[in-house]
Amino acid sequence: MWVSLMQKCINLKYGQLKNKDVVDSQGQPVGRVVDFIFTVEGTKLQPKYIVLGGGRVEEFLESIGARPDNDPVFTTQVMESVDEDKIVLCADHDMLKSTLDSDVIGENDRKFSEISKIKVIDADNIKVGNVIDVWFADDGEVYLLLGGGFFEETLERLRAQPNIDLLASHKDIESFGDKEIKLKWTKFQLQSNCEKEYDKLKRELSSRDKPGDYRFPQLRLGKGPSRGMA
Image (cartoon, rainbow, N blue to C red):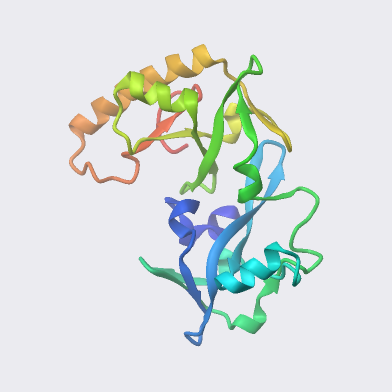
């Protein structure tokens, strides 16, 4: 189900969608992407809605409480295309729901802007970083892109290229709370696995005909039989 929902976003990061202008089926502008709503099911993120924001004046009025925070939302099902500079919908703007609708943000739903503020800790309860983005894989999985002190230091230690993303799947997460995301691995295990996976990655790159393959920058954190997108 989720693969079909996310088919327009496959192999994209949320960061690649953020701030894109959005137009409806009539070509009318309806806003720009400012956030993403996910449903948290255990340790897994399920995509739900993309949130749109308006102009700077509108956002300023909302931030000071001068008007309701009433932002349009849409699902990837109504995305016609994702271009370099805009997202085109196959629905009119008046068909979109908003963040004030009772069924849009549920008890287990979180905006990415909230998730990015949650600290990521290892199995020993030591903070190792934060979620800096999410990546939508072709199997419907939503991977967390992790950054911050420990992860940046690990890439520097490996002398890895700066565009490599450190990914964590729901299988690498012990618990997903409002204040902490706890990984199953210790810092030592994460570092050791990154070293092994980076060696695999370099061997793959040296034998790959198309180094521009979308998997090029992806480096898994957790233990597994391979780096394949399983």
